Length: 134
Image 1: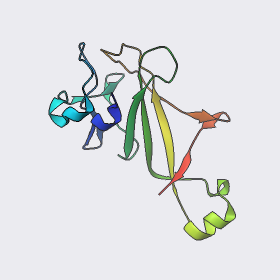
Image 2: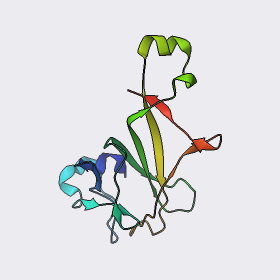
Image 3: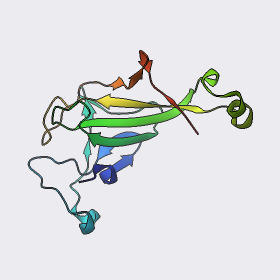
Image 4: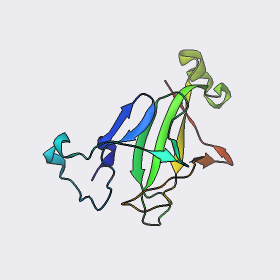
């Protein structure tokens, strides 16, 4: 099941409409939205998951190889991407970019009953990895 199609975004808080819960079986893609489970508000550490400025791109996959799907949330917004990391030609032509980062919420529950407790940004070279976004 491709869960990325099943996410619903509402009022800048992350809401998931088809996270497999309580033994829900995989849905066939051709059945459409009528087969989605009711939305649930995702929490981490007991608080609703909310990104920096409300632009999120959630995806579910097992990132650490433990067999349990984790929550990945790409975010971008008002923070400026460090211009010194861009080639001079790009800086001159395009100017400023927002900074895109990837939050990793490790699932400390199960696939049927996911639980998240905080996140870490994906890292590269000992610091939060980021990309320029528009």
